[in-house]
Amino acid sequence: MFAVRAAKRAPWAVVGEKIIEALVYFCGFSAIVFVLGIFVFVFKEALPIFAHEQFSLTEFLTSSDWYPTSESNKRYGVFAMIVGTASVTVLAMVIAVPFGLGAAIYLSEFCGQKTRETLKIVIELLAAVPSVVWGFIGLTVMSKLIVQYTGTPVGVNVLNGGLILALMSVPIIVSISEDALKAVPDSYREAAIALGVTRWQLVWRVLLPAAKQGLLAAVLLGVGRGVGETMAVLMATGHAVHIPHGVLDSVRTLTANIAAELGEAPAGSDHYRVLFLTGVLLFTLTFAVNLIADTIVRGIRRK
Amino acid sequence: MIYPSPALSRRFFPLLCVATGALAFLAGCKPKTGDVGTTGGKSRTTIQNKGSDTMVNVAQVWAEEYKKLQPHVDVEVSGGGSGVGIAALTKGTIDLANSSRDMKAEEKAQAKKNTGKEPKEFVVGFDALAVYVHKDNPLTEITNEQLADIFAEGGKITKWSDLGVKLPGGQDPIVRISRQSSSGTYEFFREHVLNKKDFKLGSRDMNGSKEVVELVASTVSAIGYSGLGYNEPGKVRMLRVSPKAGQPAIEPSVATTLNRQYPIARSLLVYTLGEPAGETKLYIDWILSDAGQKVVEKSGYVPLRASAGKP
Image (tube, rainbow over all chains, first blue to last red; front, top):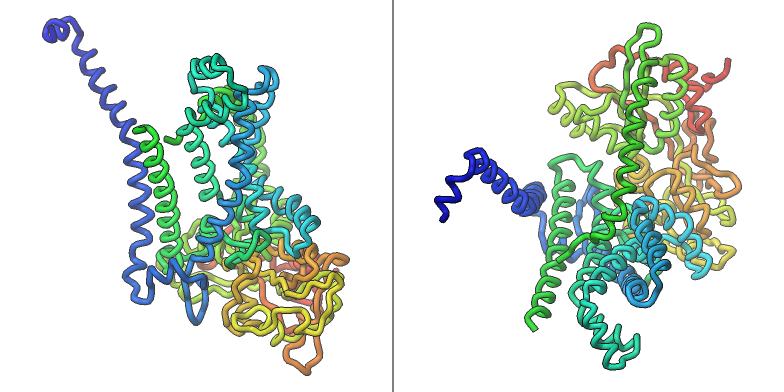
């Protein structure tokens, strides 16, 4: 049968199909190539620092002394910045997750067609605001409000960065959670309503468990945004190397530090290598978040 | 596992189409304005100028004024910090680097290695670094040692009461406002005020000279350093600085910078790769002329000659 079909087709069609097959194959694997390529490049730039006998990885990860341009005693410790990134991201998620999920539930289950369309357009426009504009709002508007309402001396701090990041990640969380809720088959809703549940019971007991994976993906994408966002947090957090004792302290994040210092670090210097090592650290952090999420999602699937 | 919302891209597709169309339209318009470029038979030249944030304002005015005289020369000015400008010069990607600190020996070596040319330095003016406090702060003068004790690692002054100052709001901890480490201002302050010691960690490191003054203006308990030209009277105050305890404190001003009395003053520099030639040379000559020096004075810095700017 195979021979018969092959005989019927023109030779160019067979070749063409092979080419397209190869192209599609390449497209599929290109993501792996790019991710590996980026990792190899970043790692290659960072690697020579380990040959330096004065550099210790433990000190890099646990010390909060960041003196990359000191004339007497250069020290590279990013612990304060790891804490900075973590504190801003956690605060942003504490604010954004309830808001985002709430908005998604309202959009997909409670509101009417017209309201939904309007709200969705507005929320998606919110996602289109460039991050530097968010940073600007943090620096000028938000910082004044924070000083006014909390009485703290400086308005650029963890709270400011967290609020700005929360505003930035809410649209993403809303869009993806809403899609996830929409993807729950209507038969679930009909079955639940037929059993006489209230709307609240429907959401809490049926829809949320059914859409668990998609909702988790939404939250993790928000975390990813928080860890990776640079410009807005650079402007809103105060850029101080300092382990925060509360939400009103200024911090510096890993990303902001790279953005502010890579331009001046002479290529190939220790400072430059350490900044790339910070890049490797960020890469590893996001990789770990994704891996954990993937494992959780798989675990849910198996049940 | 993580996927972009299909709804998002679907909704933005028409918007994207409109934006692309608009861009195409604008691109179509561009050649018309480009034609003006060959006035007077001279070909259009662009001079790339980058570096010190302290000098970015004055460099911008130079570029604009020069454009009026020589319409065929475009000077593209950007900031980022002295370190950024010098790094770009050593890679040979710009023509002029503005710097508020001297180029280091290893940077010169790097430039020689990359481009084969020795960087050449031009002093184009002077700047006094002023120490700013909030307008409601009763402090009027400070010594160099006190500044080092406030800003340097291991320094003992952390509260306003250590200086004998009581702030109107009752806040006591000193909020230190500094610059990011690529800034020439940062390195100058470290070298001349902190005596090459490191900064205390935990200062708010701002991205520009103007941001320092703005943050001081909105923070009663703040102290920060920035160029003399960034003073905003009525919002912040500049402190008089004495070189040593017991010596008289000097008001930062043009006169005290020129007669070298004011302790925290520095040269503003422009670097080229090798001996400048052609339009770049003409531009530097113009900067050093009275017309260029007048711009320096108007921007709040100190010109090379006290007579500059006067007819």
